[in-house]
Image (cartoon, rainbow, N blue to C red; front, side):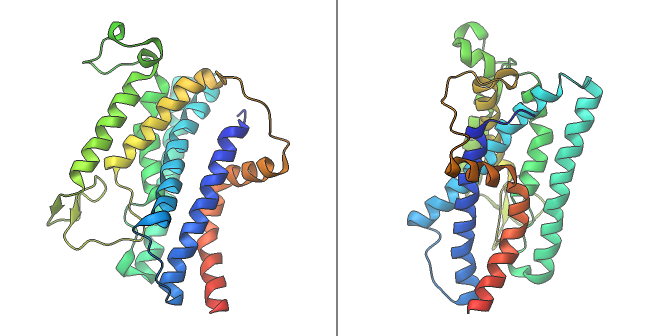
Length: 259
C-alpha cells in the first residue's frame, strides 16, 4: 500500500503521546506517584493519543480498502478485512486474558484493540461505498464533499452524541460493556466502548474518503518524508501495533528496576 508520510507521522506522534501517558500511569501504579491523570494536561495528553489512534485507524481503513480493491474481488475483499478485524480483536482478547490474570481489579474487557477490531468490520461498508448517504439526507441538500462522504460523517456524530448520553447510564449487568453501558462500580485500565468511540472511527473514515479518495492524496503538500524527525515519526507510526504491545512491559520493567 502506498504510504503517506503525513498519516504515518501523525500516528507516530500519537504513539509518543500514548507512551508518555502510560509512563505517568505506570509511575502512579507501580512507584507510588500521584500524577493527576483525570484532569489537566495529562488528561488532554491521553485523550489526544486515543482520539488520534482511533480516527487514524478509520482513515487507514479507507486507504487499505481502496488500494486492495484494485487487486481483489468483492469476496476476497470481505475475507481480507474480516480477517484483519478479527485478528486485531483477538489481540485485544490476549490483553484481556493477561490483565485478568495479573491485574483483575483493572482488567481490560473492551480496550482500544477490541474497538479497532470490531470497528474495522462494522466500518467496512462505509469504506466500500463512501457516497452512500443516510436515508434522511438527500444529496441535493448537501455540498459536493458532504454528499461524497455523508454517511460516515453524520452517523459518526450521532454515535458520539449517543456516547455522551450513555456515559451517565449504569446497569446491573456487565454484558453491555462493549456498547458503553457500564455496571455500577466498573473500573478498567483501558475502556473504549462502541459508544462513542465507533463514532470517532467513522469520522476517520469520513476524513479518509474525503482527503484520500481512491487512496490518492486530494491536496498538495510538500514532501518532508526525508526529514530525520519526520522519518522517525513515520517509523513509529508504521510499527504502532508492535509498539502498543511492547511498550508497557518495557515501561513497567524500567520503573520497577529504577524504583
